[in-house]
Image 1 (spheres, rainbow, N blue to C red):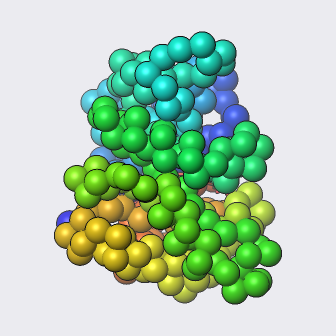
Image 2 (cartoon, rainbow, N blue to C red; image 1 turned 45 degrees about the horizontal axis):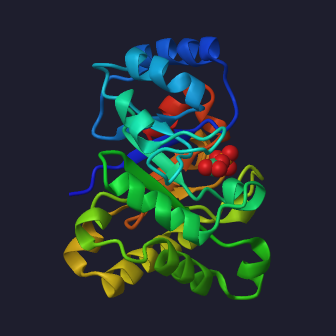
Length: 248
Ligand code: PGA
């Protein structure tokens, strides 16, 4: 049985003081449910959030990682550094990183391999642009991303993977994919994993939808059979909104 995962992606929002204020609010609201909650925060907040959420069941994630063990990579953070402070998840290949920071399927693949060598669970983001969807290429694009991003990664690792289907046209735009569109792609992702690996492996993978998820649409999205969770940007910045989504 897959436990639903609702993960917040704070992007470049919240100072440490703001992050801790959020944690205090969420701790009061979050009673521990059968839904796993996580917050993916800026690097500077991670250690404080791990401490603040200790014993609450709320997990903490990073939004990026470097693929090398260590080295002369000014400004970068390694998987070992994240592991040391108790980070549970790490977003990899978010479309904003692909678009603004030259993230490619090749670097995504290296990052996934690095994380799988340790204990942090990757949240791999895939999804098509509006142009690609309008051209009828959405499914081909996602299939290509999965093939390239997971190249050389074995089934045992993939069982720990979280995949977030995030159509680029729905991120931060207020334009959500319909529950049917999201469901269709999440089902397609699982059938692609069955073809790449096998049914048992594909069954273990948590497949989230992301893109303008908010309290008002969380229930209908989360009630779809093939959707195991959500990656939530804007609506994860307020503890009350985030909690409403967890409580879908
Ligand atoms: P959004 O962002 O919920 O603000 O659309 C989602 C994401 O980028 O992960």
